Image 1 (cartoon, rainbow, N blue to C red):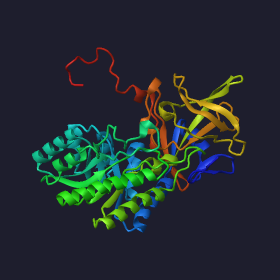
Image 2: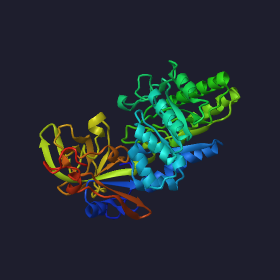
Image 3: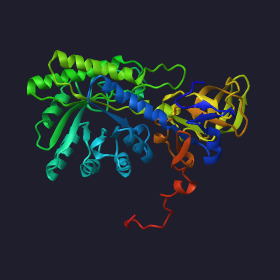
Image 4: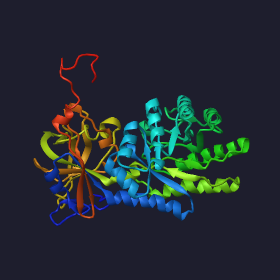
Length: 442
């Protein structure tokens, strides 16, 4: 198997993360259990930041926290001097609870509510990423009413089609996100925002998709946005101090995936920006990026306990685990592929071909269609790697299954950072019949 970050095989033949035995973790904390390799998260964060520094470019690296949000990971992001990308009032609330510096919070979203925008003003966050004309009107109204300034970026769709799954492509013209760069919408948004007394227009933002392996699309996006910024300078004598080129950098889930090093994506984008600023005598903007999956994705490993086995002669063998689409819906949602190992049998051949099935009452609840693992028996511990992004974030209580616990591991130490839900948690918001009369305060 491919070992990620601090993963190793210990003297007991068990998978270890940061020196912590995952089998012991599973027995102590129960399963499903998501384990994060915090050293790997820190390593990736430093790599992104160092690349900008080596090129002499002012930058912000914002953790795109929709990949995985919690108070503890926000605290780690703050320790690494990252900025933070949030996309909802709930993520903003979590960031505030974590004590994250408000000036380094960027608020995204294609349908921010009036209440969420007020919340952003209340917390005096660093930046709103404006996504549509309705939002412009709301932001102006709140700013003028309060006589408070808010910094904004204009999100645009650059018309770049990235090579990835359609569900995670966002930069093409037909997208629910942002102002179209080619049909005049971005120019109209600019005219409505620049020179407003309470709007600090920082520049533009784009995000072309997710799990992208080649760098060409990022180069084309950077070129498109720089061209527009240069035209605004020529027409309106306005210089954008910030260029946010988003994220979407791919990671390795299986042997089929061939991602570039994080620095390669940054260098491709930054090089075109430097070249165009020299050619057009334009001030070099501060470059912001928003890695999410590429910071946290392969830092996460989910541990399951093996349950039933079903043989379909001549077809396949099903190995069922005690989780599934309730803690990782990505395989069922868009065919995401993963790699699994038998965590308590790491020294045995991982060559038994099986289908890893979840326990949800859905035929489509298959975590891995074709996995190669050591032979298992009831009670063995199965580990699926690279589950750090969009697993817990998209988890549900489908079939009334409680959400899993989360443990951070680093330097041989372990810490529980999200407790396992209980059945009491699952029904906590339920209201029995006739307990509350309609109209009474709920």
